[in-house]
Length: 468
Ligand SMILES: [Zn+2]
Image 1 (cartoon, rainbow, N blue to C red):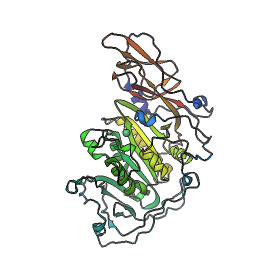
Image 2: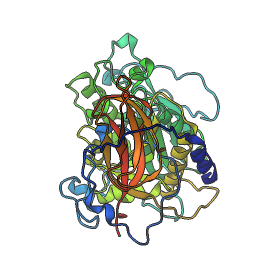
Image 3: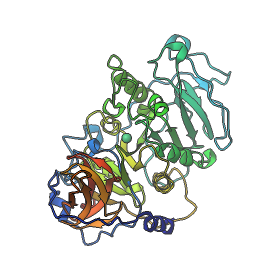
Image 4: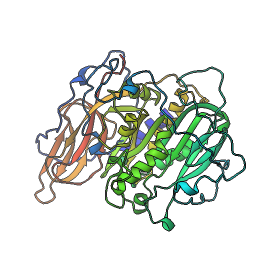
């Protein structure tokens, strides 16, 4: 796999040669203070390809403020810094039993469910109306004691029996009832007890790699060998997906409205419904995105490294790059962390595309995570690879014109190095863009026409490994 990735890396780029005039370009952010603190023991990143997410989502990236051994008062709620406390689950009530569907088999599209209406929801679909007990969701990480049988997973008014998988449907209830368009939800409930991992994709409707990452991850699971459960929503923003748009029909960015409000805007309501009906049932969440606006991201996690629980969570993702980002208000991962759920954003590639090597990196890291959490046993043991941690800053174009890059995604760069050029198509002037610091290209714009101020290169500077 690694060899494959390296091969892809070398195959990707074709340098563009242009004549140019020297002209400094200033970065927007100062290089993080901790960028020089490379621990001697830290391994150099392996050449995993990672591409990134969206500029707005990382504008708040900054050096870690406090040692991870100390509590993080400002970011983490009390319940988060203390020993993990089981989050309150909703009072269980009898639900219909979800049909056991072998997710490996091609199945007809799920039957649309009626819009949520409490008065008509409580009719069990079968006679098997089992008594539901609260799930043991606080399975400790990395344990190898005798597996404990799982309980039914209650989700979306259905019960998913242990050792089964199924397809459910979530409807946010914002549409005209007869035109309701349920969003498919894939569920695998393992035969043994364990944590619930949720995977969300395409919250931005034009970000497609996550759809395939979730498909490959979930359809490879065997409920008979799984401890815990995995809930996947490949396409959260179905309207945006159908229109090839990042946004919701009201032109809002869904990923700025979590945890949502039942009486707010359309985006607030959709966010609220998703959060209440699904996300609150998760112990862990990986929200999958890609770069936006013709930018591509090295596969990487975005995580609030000031939160010790989140920082520890990032250790399970194989060699993936981890970019510290405290997260914007309203982002799903921010809301989830505030609700006591371990959550990160996974960035892979660029929007509007299906990219095989980015998808492989994502699937591999999720598989690694599930193994680390004791949910599955991987056939091959590859040691205990650690992620590499970054602070980051964007380098912006100071001139309008056509951007031609001289560096490739994932490249190591040094301060002052020419990363690319802006060519003015009218005057023929050419303006170089220089790196603001030593680091690695963790995200970049694809060659395109840009205006001054366009965020062109996302430079990651290696940061201290948390907990050391
Ligand atoms: Zn996104």
